[in-house]
Length: 356
Image 1 (cartoon, rainbow, N blue to C red):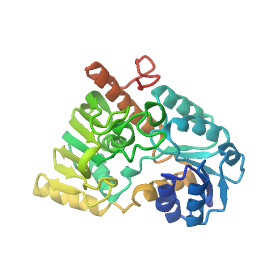
Image 2 (image 1 turned 180 degrees about the vertical axis):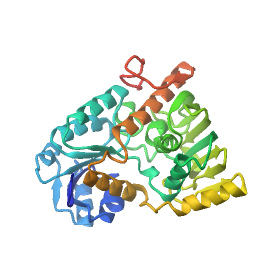
Image 3 (image 1 turned 60 degrees about the vertical axis):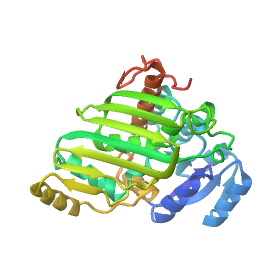
Image 4 (image 1 turned 135 degrees about the vertical axis):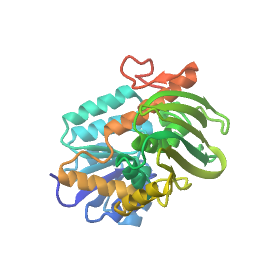
């Protein structure tokens, strides 16, 4: 059991700022950000000054050597995640890591194996789950009130221009590991699996139509869920109005997320009952669901509670592997023009990596 306030070191001061502002700064009874680490000294100093962080360190290994650090929060470009996770686990730290966790299913399985012998726990980031809307939907589904799932659709319609990709690592297979599928739609796809469970078969197409980049910026797909439900997902980085939308149809209810691009888990979701009786059951169930913190606030709070209770993290490496398995299926289907059956194991041709 882990008690008391945990000392955190945030590695990477880009998205790391959101982790601090939305997550740790709103959970001061559970965390203290003791150090930040970044190769960009000016950016690191600005972030540390803003939040009153004592230690500013440019060397990752030096952070790992600090015995007072309990949690390493990795917010670096994706290609750096694997080595940092393995080093942090070997150093006995708890680890938080941004998406995508690693660059292949083989690496995901390597991380899972390393976790089994580690003192600390790893929590991948999937903050979009955390919001009253998504958690209410989860309750209605798991309680059986929603009934049999029929079909659904997800839309990730965002805008990214050449200015966004004017960066040493974005838009490149070697460093970003993928495009709209890997770094943008992965959030919505995680929510789908969080609510509907595993995917059994997938067909996908990808294209690069919006920006002059190596990776894809448009995707479209058709899924068959293990439950028998059918699902479609489309994403682009060329939308003039940014929205994320999830609409799910069940035997007793149709539910739809907000359209907020970066927080579709927030409430209020629309819950449309199939009958008056179903409406009464839904209303009673929703009244019993406690509010949760949104995005990083909710996820960091849930992680602290899990560590205190000696429970698994609220988002696990298995969840991250499932997201990467889905991405692998997308890339393989787009390359071959065929359906891909899941799950994917070591015998799959893209197990060692989906990059061309």
